[in-house]
Length: 111
Length: 117
Image 1 (tube, rainbow over the protein chains, first blue to last red):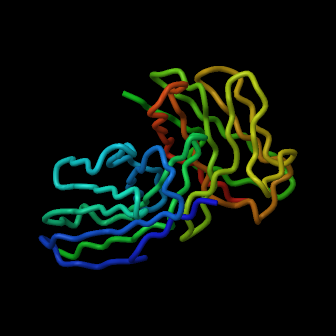
Image 2: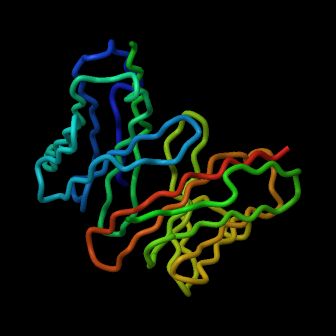
C-alpha cells in the first residue's frame, strides 16, 4: 500500500527566504507525482506535475524534483513571499489513476 | 483549460437528512471522476472512483449505501450523502480526469463544506 509522507508538517520563514519542502513515498512504481497548493477552506491548485520519466519541473519560482528510485521529491520555492503562505500537498499516482496524498506542509511566510 | 466546479460550496443540514453535491467538468469531458473527503488538518482521502455510465468503485471502509455516487454524463457526477450524521461533516472535493490515455492528470473542484447539525 502506497504511503506518502511530507516533512516538515509546518514551516515558518521570513519573506525572501528560499525553502525546500520534502515528500517521500514507499512504492516507487508511480506514474507521476504532483504538488498542489491548498488555501484554508479552499480546493486544490495544481502547481507542478512530474512524470515518472522526468527528473524535475519548473514553474516560475517553483522547482520540483523527483527521484523515483529513492522515493523522494522536493519542492523548492525561491524568494518566498507572504502570498505563498498555504498548505502544500504532495500526491503520487499509480497505474490505477488513484492519487495518494501526503498530509501536507503548512507554510507561513512572514513579512 | 480544465475547469471543475462543485455545487454547493457550503451546506448545512440536519441530522438524518440527505445532501446532494454536484461535480461538473465545465470545458472538457471527464471519463473518470473521483470523490475525496478531507477532515480538519488531515489529507485528502479517496472515497470512490466513478466512470460515466457504470457503478462507482468505493475504497475500503466507505459505505456505498451511504455515499451514493451517480456519474450520469461525461460532465457531471453527483455524490449524495444519505441520512447524514454529524460525523459526516467534512470537506468533500471532487476531481475529474480527461483520460482514458495518460497522463491521467486530475483537475480538482473547489470543494464543498458539509456541516451536519
